[in-house]
Image 1 (cartoon, rainbow, N blue to C red):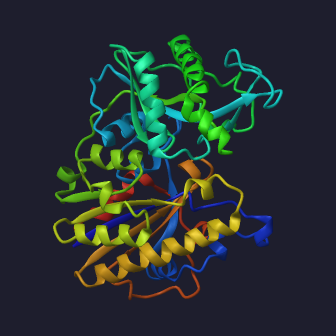
Image 2: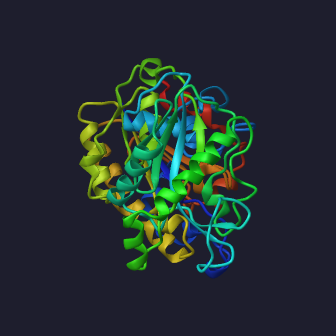
Length: 402
C-alpha cells in the first residue's frame, strides 16, 4: 500500500463578489480533485488549536497526527529543523522576517525609532530574493550577533534568529496581519520584549543605510529596511510517525516550515534542489520517484506568495487549476500504476487560521461508487451531513490496516 497526503495550503477562500459570490475553488476547473471528492470521502476537518499561538506549520502538525497543544512549537523551530539550525531545548528560535516599514507621514518623513509613527508597508520586503536577503542578514549578524544572539539566512524574506537560553514568553505578531497599519501596538510585548525591540531598532538603522537597499530603492523596489521577530518557540521532540505506523516516508516541500514539520515527524526531507524549477509537475515527479523506495509521501504545495497575499482573485483560480492539472493529476496517474494506494488532500485558508479546513480521501484508483456532481469545494464539503473530523486523529484512519 502506498500513502500520499497532499496539503493544499491557502487554496480555500471566502466567496468573492467578482466571482458572483463563489469561491475560487468553485470557479476553477479541477477534474482530478473532483474525482477524489466523488469517489471517496469528502468532509470538514477540525483543527484543535484553542489556546495555541497560530502560525505556519500548525495545520501540517495536526495533519500528521500531533496534538498542537503538546507538540506545536511555532514556525520558528520548524524552520530551524529544516535549515539544520541546531540548538538546545533552552534556546528560543524566532522567525526573522524581512519587511518594509515607512513613516506614517509618508516617504518624506524620517524614522528615529520603531513605534507609533511607523507603518508596516510590506510584510515580504517586496518579495525580496534569497541572495539579496542573505547579504542583509549576514550584515545584521556581523554587527548584532553574539554568543547569545545569532541570525541565520533562510529563503526569500523568511529567516531565523536564535536567542540562546532566551525568554520564550514574549507576545509577537505575524507581520502579514498588520500590513498598512501602525506597528506601535504590535511590537513585541511581555517577558524579553525589551531585548527584541532593541534588536529590531538596531537592525533598522543597519538596513536603512545598507548599499543594497539604496540600490533597491533606485531600481524602484521596496527596501528591506526592517526585521520582524515573531513565530517564537523552543524545539519539541516529537514521537516518530514512521515508527508508530511502521512505514517509510518522505516530505516533499520547498517551504522550510513544512519541510521542518516532516523532519520533526521522522520523515526524510527531499533535497529542495530537486525542485529548484519551482513548478508543480516537477514536485509530482519527485514524489512519485520517492514512492519507488518509500510507503508514504507528505506533499506540501501552496500558491505563490504574491497570489495568496495579493488581490488578483483570477490568479488564484488559475493557480488552483494548475495545482489540479500538474500535481494532483500526475500523482493519480503514477499511483494507479503502483498498486493499492490511499490519497488524502487537505485544503485550508491562508496560514490555516481564516476558516476551517476540509478534505477528500479515497483509496485505490478512485473507481468505486461515485457521487455524481460532487466537487472538491468548500460548499460541497460543508454540506456533508456529518460532523467535522478531528484532524489529529484522521491519520489513524489513513494508516489503518483494515
